[in-house]
Image (cartoon, rainbow, N blue to C red):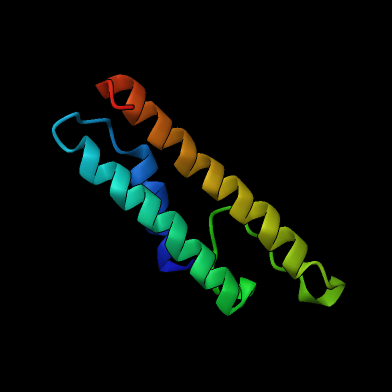
Length: 89
């Protein structure tokens, strides 16, 4: 599993703390940017949970895009949860 996927998932499971909300949002947004950079370098270089690579069938890129989309949705959901919980617009 790539470092990026692990870090983002840990952050998404972390309880919301309004004391660190702004820093947490910045870190989550940075995580999304890192994911985009890794995709540009080659989709097989990032491994969010649920990514199943099957090069023999030629489905690596499609499955990676789906997994990365799910991963970014998870990060967006956590950002929204933090903003809602802490009253950040």
